[in-house]
Amino acid sequence: MENQKSNSPLKAAILVLSLLLVGSVIYIFKLTNETSSLENTVTTVKTEKENVLKELQELKSTYDAAIAENTSMSDELITEREKVVGLIAKVEKSNGDVTSLKKYKQQYLDLQTKMNGLMQEVEMLTKENQTLTTNLDSTKVVLEDTKNYTKTLVGQNEELAKTV
Image 1 (cartoon, rainbow, N blue to C red):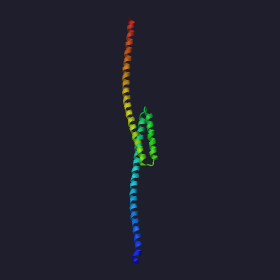
Image 2 (image 1 turned 180 degrees about the vertical axis):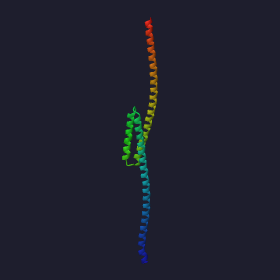
Image 3 (image 1 turned 60 degrees about the vertical axis):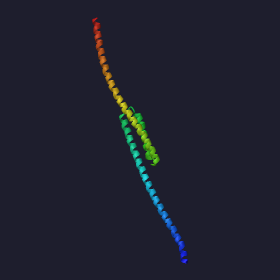
Image 4 (image 1 turned 90 degrees about the vertical axis):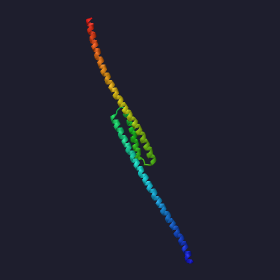
């Protein structure tokens, strides 16, 4: 009986330690799962940040090309290009949290939309410029013909004046 009494506290201690061990194992398992989840999130955010930077670099290159080929709208294009450069700097300095990346992605999309609008305006102005150039050339030809005809008439008028 005395042996059973001395085993009772020992069994209780073993039971408590076993429960603590099981609890620790479960806690470690959950932490491992959370760590894996966080690592996946960090990887996703880094990838998204790299994608945003790549897209912004492409947009900057597009602006550079548009600025190089167009002089009439270069002020507007330079202003938009500077916005892209500023956004690139912000993204590079950011910690890469999801909220700021979404904000930067939205700003990129806004700039992309504005760029598309400006490029359409450039195309429209280029076509209009070609039309006006063609009209100007046609007008110059007609004007030259009219001048020649006028000179002929003036010459004929002078000859008629001499005969009268």
